[in-house]
Image (cartoon, rainbow, N blue to C red):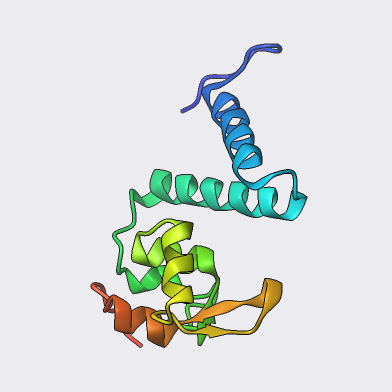
Amino acid sequence: MRKPIKIGQESDDSAEFTQDLIEINAKHGSDAQVVFDQLALRLERRAMEQIIGPAPAGNIELLRDVRGNLPDAVTREKAALYLGLKARQIQNLMRDGTLLIVGGGLSKRITVDSLLRYKPASILANE
């Protein structure tokens, strides 16, 4: 159970959040959408790790949508979680054609088939 925070007292979480914002802003500039996406990804990873521990790379459950279905393509963020790689490494794999892309611009997605070819799933769930 968490201890209550007194008014004017900074929690470890808020200090971490502030540090994340500073790092993301320094790396990606002030583009609000990019900052929001990067921050959301960090918070999602932390929340997942707190609930279930670090997810092992190759866990096919990381690719499933909210209904439990395996989609045809996923975001770069989900691909990074599944492969256990950083965003830059995902971009390099996309650029050299190892990971196949569908869509364009902000709706660019990576095909699940190309992810599974690159790293076969280590945890297969019932389909």
